[in-house]
Image 1: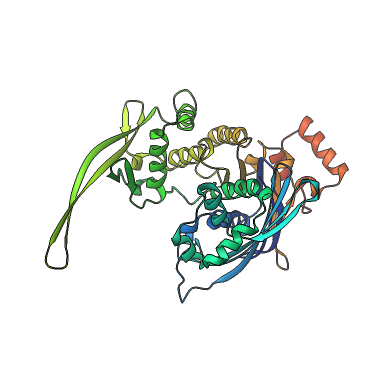
Image 2 (image 1 turned 135 degrees about the horizontal axis):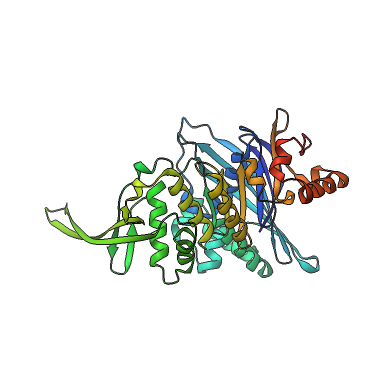
Length: 411
């Protein structure tokens, strides 16, 4: 799990430090306090673990150098990752990472210590597959001799923990409040190219991407997570839908290319057209016919329930969801947070009604310090925290306590 993260020189986070809850952390605060910036900074760990996420530079883009310090706990081993990241923000307000450098510090049992420099993506690929592809060396400009020294300098007792951290970082997922708005813009189908038993996916984003993920989960050999998802959103659970099916239509296309000498090469591509259909009552609906609240809820719960993620960052789960449904969503999130670490940002005091003070972090912005995140138990005296406990047991709830200013400016 991720125990602590320190963010320097990233947007409003001049030097923001937060000790995360092992299961569920809830960040609450006003607009422009920096809650989303904390989540986006955590996502840098995922970008570092996915070498294909490095983007090309643009001359007119303003590049910012940020520093991320992440502390992980893997059984009895404490792992600290110090990273410097060069990135810029594109026109869609997404971070494009240009380069990064990572240094690892290990502290094991019996006083063992180790430190070495190695990219997160390199560690994950090396320890998982036992090899590093040539394009990875070119991407990071790693000379073969330097690569050999990197491998030699990794102590054997750190490899299991290193592999766990790399797996954790590559499994971080993000659910944003601005995602999946206006389902009417969603395509009613998507295409997959078939090459023997292999399937090649054409680049999909947004609504179409989550539909493809649902389709892949259903087609997987072990689709237990997908079955749990359908049980929860279907007639036995929240009754958002009655069923979800994917109709498959084989198609093909022919490409012509002229080679040197005038030879014409003909290539036939076998395609699979996938058409998702949601059944609600007697009606079969395309994805673009769902309401925004329904689509958002389905996407969020799919991320929460399916098992391909190690951590989930959730931005404003209350958007477009009524309180009755939000209550059920939060209980599901709490249940699954025992299996994957979750961090929620919210403006809603209603969300606080479903968590404990140990889960709550108040986020504020100060001109001199930037974004500041304070954990509620540490920001209160023992007497104040005891009074809060008594209030929650006898009189009211945490959301009401927040509305009345009971948590105070000290948080």
